[in-house]
Amino acid sequence: MKSFLIIGMGKFGKMLGSKLLELGNEVMIVDKNDAVIQELSPIYTNSYIGNCTNEGVLRSLGVNNFDICFVAIGDDFQSSLEITSLLKELGARYVISKAERDIQAKFLLRNGADEIVYPERDIAIKLATRCDAHNIFDFIELTSEVGIFEIAVPKKWVKHTLAELNIRKKYMLNVLAIKKGSAINPMPEAGYVFCPDDHIVVLGKPNDITRVNGKKE
Image 1 (cartoon, rainbow, N blue to C red):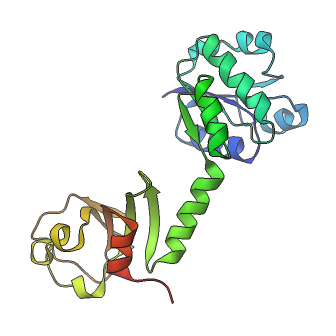
Image 2 (tube, helix red, strand yellow):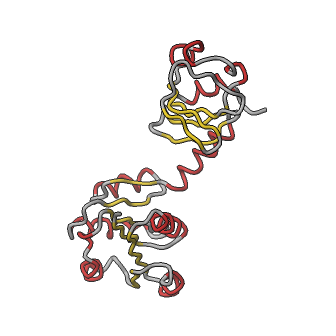
């Protein structure tokens, strides 16, 4: 179990906090809007109404006691910048700040952020990639050129083994796992025979995924 501080309880902050609680972590939330905190306080053991651009407010929270502090403010970049800087000055262990554009990320990193997240951009990229190609069910971008994809097994692969298909050499893809419903077979052996209902988790480039699956018509 880890401890997290979330500053800014907009849509992103709410979803983030909800999932962290679901995973069994300790979560403290802060927002300057008292109506927002009153709405969420029955869900969270620790909640606080306050403007975190005020150093005294942040100091009172004991930010150095949290494993990760999230700056989830999306509508006031100046405040996000100030809070990120103050968190590091007060000894926060690890700060993850939300950004909407690269220029914002640049300034947040300069002011102490350890990591930047782009929720809207990431969702857009994921959706565009999934909709562009045929039979992509999930996608994680690792770099601008490489990602992890969950795809339906191509029909021409069915009843063939990994070794027979020589996927890494022929298609430039690395098979990480096979999914059958909710069951996962990590790092399948070379003799694994593909079935029609298989989903494959592969590491590779989007162009190579498109080459295997084709585009949606």
